[in-house]
Image 1 (cartoon, rainbow, N blue to C red):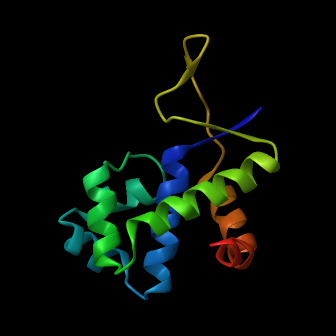
Image 2 (image 1 turned 90 degrees about the vertical axis):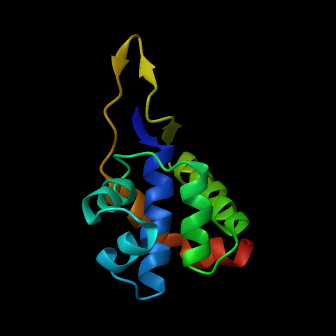
Length: 121
């Protein structure tokens, strides 16, 4: 089984949205009141965004937070259709930590299907 975390999906979405607005990671991190390293961990799915951070990041990017949730739902659906199991970052299987797929897979699916995702919104 191949696992992808919810945090990887959310991080990828914000990384992609940030890039679409031509905002570099350092600038976005400052606006988020984070270090660049912390933002990198979020964008790579190694840190979990809380709801306030999602709302704050959406506001900075001048997008509706509901749009982020729609993107999340569509991307999660596409990944599941490709056979990935979506789990929480802190989930375990039989008491063992889960080994997640590389973040590049999530980015690839988002990039590959962005137009179909956008057309469904």
